[in-house]
Image (cartoon, rainbow, N blue to C red; front, side):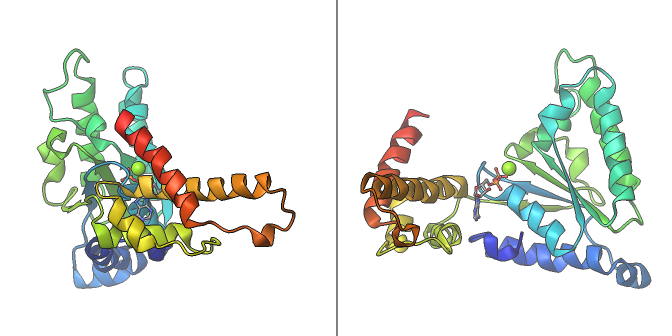
Length: 259
Ligand SMILES: Nc1ncnc2c1ncn2[C@@H]1O[C@H](COP(=O)(O)OP(=O)(O)O)[C@@H](O)[C@H]1O
Ligand SMILES: [Mg+2]
């Protein structure tokens, strides 16, 4: 996973490169100089915009291990197990250092305390455990927590204090230029013929990165269908055309309006 595989999000990529990679790659320089790197990062914004990709890119570019968990999955365990899972997660991360711990939908794991009803304080204790673990990482610059959420307001504010998830980055829906970059990423190396990706970037206002990946893939599938119907035998001749994109676009637009 490289930064080039992520379309758009230039400022965020740069911030992550400057402020995070260094601390994972050269912890001794941070220790010697007393420079502080963010302990944790919160990526927030609508789904499908590349938050998971960003966390993976940080890890792989810093040659760090990557451990990913999902908030709702952790919480669905029996009482007491979620707390224990959080503890084990960080133990594992310290052993695997340098390591990036990614918690998707972190708001379900760390909702504002007192807000969850009818769970007999389970989530309050899980938040508490998470804070304890994060605070325990002081002086351990080669473990980084990255949390992702599309409901930042639902998060326990204690998690956002200095020394915890102290770098907060908004990951927005892509604008037209970013949509073009994302389409280019996903069609890199594919046999597209006379497809005006810039035009498709214009046509896809409001679409997220995941939608654009689907569009590109659906167009490739359309080209396979066409190729097979023509009973061609040389795969080198297969081409993804503007018409394939048109078909894919119609299919996905229909699906999107149904949602
Ligand atoms: N900025 C982007 N550049 C390239 N592909 C993207 C981008 N954003 C999303 N995608 C595509 O959508 C998929 C889901 O993205 P993901 O990072 O899981 O989104 P999020 O975590 O924000 O919900 C990715 O695997 C990728 O194929
Ligand atoms: Mg994701």
